[in-house]
Each structure stands twice: as structure tokens, then as C-alpha cells.
Length: 193
Image 1 (cartoon, one colour):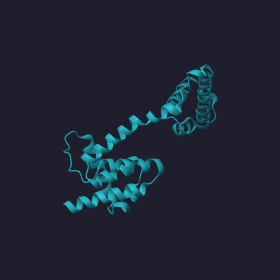
Image 2: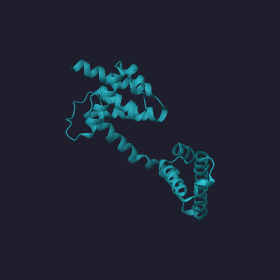
Image 3: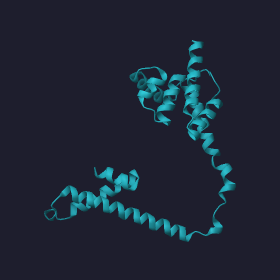
Image 4: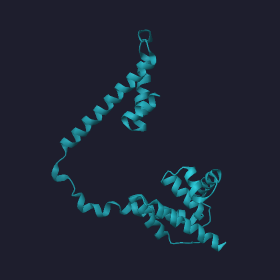
């Protein structure tokens, strides 16, 4: 309970854990006879520690901003063309790996579950498979990706086409286009077998 309060207040899992730990360390050193309601005391302590933490972060931010020299700041409009270059290459490589190691159905379930947080109920509806089967396919996909010995599959469609559709889904929320492309890959696989 204390951890969830701290997490909601500070928004950082690591900071929330530290704050709860500090609260319990302080709890171990005080005289407990003076405390009437332990739960209320601990909640108030965590809340106060969170407020102090947030105020300390604000002071640090203000100090950093005060120490900045405006002439040292970059013109981000000139740098923006290169800012996504590495990210796009990483995404392209990751999708290429998915394309080579996973069957189309596994790839579709993995992408929609892992990247877009689809629930198994939704995956069941999209792929016309039982929830248990979707879970099994997702686990199989994760195991194949973790394994270095998974053989490469024959290519059914272009990974570049998947990259463009994936980017549109991420940027604009066009998930229906991604689902449609995955469905076409699955249909192409079924025709070949």
C-alpha cells in the first residue's frame, strides 16, 4: 500500500522504493508507544517523504536551469533530422528479427501484445484463436526470440513494408492497418502450406 502511494506521487518505481525504505528505516528508530495509529503514521510519513523528494527535484531542476548559458543551447530544429536516425535503425533491426524468426501468427500476437498492450481477449477476436492458444503463441514467440538457434523462416512479405505500417501504428494509432498487414502475412503463409 505504501509503495503504491509513493509510486502514484513520484511516478518513479525506483524513487518510490527508496522512499518506502527510508520510511521503514525511520519507523525502526522511533518510539512506537507515542503512535496511536500505525497505518496512518506510515501513510503520512510516506506522503511527507514524497513531497520532500518532489521539492528537492524541483530545486535541482531550478538550479540546473539557472546555471545554463543560453548560448550553449542547441538549435533543436537543426538537430531534429538526426534525432530519430538510430531509433529508426533499431526498430528496423528488431522488426527484421521478428520477421525472420517468427511465423506470421506468432509475429502478430507478439507485436500486438508486447508493443501495443492488447489483451488476450482482443487477440482472440482478431486472430480467431482461443485465449489459451494466444497465450501459448505469445510464449512460443518470446522463446524463439530469446533463442540463438531458431532457424530463419522464408520471407513472405517485405520487412520494409512492415516497418512503415508499424511506424504509422505507433505515430498515428493506425492499428487497423497493422492488423490488416499481419492478417495478409498469415493468409499468405496458409496458401504456401
